[in-house]
Image (tube, rainbow, N blue to C red; front, side):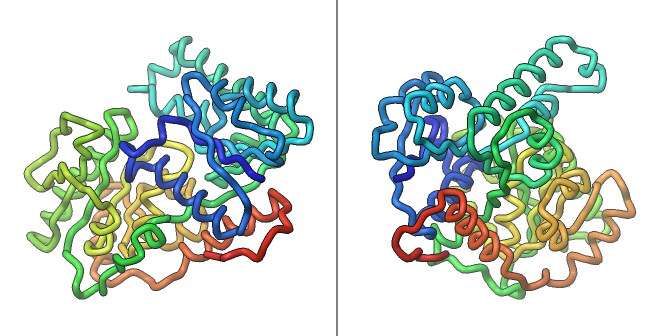
Length: 350
């Protein structure tokens, strides 16, 4: 039996957020692998609430996030037979720099470096205690997790968009029926989110000059997450209530993910590709995307006029047809099967 441990901050209010989608993808892959499992919710601020839920019939623990090495130590000591597998979502120490800094001068901030070292130490302890780290990002695996001390095997567990399985009744529309709209799915009031908004606004202004009235530009800004809205130009419309992100992606022509910051994986990129959109990404983010996804994206730094002109030409044609999402789903199922070395009933597949 596998116990899938889920921190309490991933809840219904997070519907459509990256952590919520990543959890749904893992849930679907576990079912697809035909593995017997049950879920355990625990208080992320009081993770000891997980301990009594690990009963004698549990052979494997799959825990989301690398934040609780003390709990892993305790469980390994109490259950010597237990396999511990951690789903890593971010290169946490690197991510701290991108979330906290406001300028280059922040690199001289001693407190920032102290927090960086705390997070790196926490992740190293996690690698020491776990049997497997299941990384959402191949780039993070190669450039962060493998450099940390510890014995855990590092394996890539790819994210794939769960929307086609969660909302199977909603299909991507044919290209000629789609709205000539470019959508950016916002973010938060951190440096990464604000960089995305700034670059999207810049793209809207420049593309509007090149192709007057050909495109509309829409920024989703979920009201349940952010009561205030960032300032944008008149070229950008703001959607405050986007109840079904997948439905929107299936009827528009392009999605823009234009922040250069952040680690882990920009899940919206894979969602847009699965929905049949052109996906426009900042070159810095493209460097950290899986190769298969990167090849399907359009790269653009809105501060570079040449990039915007090239993008305007590329947007005229429909995107390449592909089955990347299905491939990634099947890969996730395979990784789960081999990680848990299950010989249980025939799998259902994706």
